[in-house]
Image (cartoon, rainbow, N blue to C red; front, side):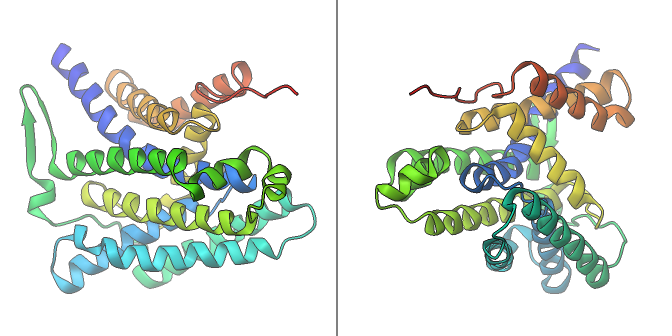
Length: 290
């Protein structure tokens, strides 16, 4: 039983890295624009299907599909931003409706192009076992957990050290004050959308490398990303990683000790508990005075 729990914890940590990669893109856009991009999960899923196409049509490792996924997903992210920039009245509510409509369009486009059949990678290399004592996983899980940590660390460095990163943080903190300091909010917003597209591209290829994909998965991915955003709170990239790992651990332990049918429920319970008792999130910055 102990080995089973240890394996569950290990799998939950690896899965949490992927969740953090998905959640950070949504959190970044929400921080700069106060808009929840309901199409974010579909962008992740689009990258996964691009990886599937590259593997089946070209016969190469789906990891090599990342450049193609980056181009197409970032183009879609830029298009979504352009549509959002046209919204002038009741931006928060109308943006929710708009991105939800885009999500429905993307889901049906994926369904039309790739059909409703579930797909998974046939790469022996990605599905190969990696064993650490009593713990085992697929090579794709370990690879993309490492990639997720590197991307999160790189983005944290960019936000804290670079001029554009500090501009994104300034717009997220106080849009009007950032404008008075000579920062162009539209430029920071499009940068945020493109970075979210980059993260979604890596996350989508990661999902295809060791999970089954199907057109209906996009909505579930968006919900998980939103749960992680609430768990982490605004302004904390390490919080996003820890929030993703917490969600991954909760789901893994629920499947091991209870039933896999409860996995989605436990995520929503975490979401509601944090929302009620810690509205700023586990690692969020509290409202400043003055």
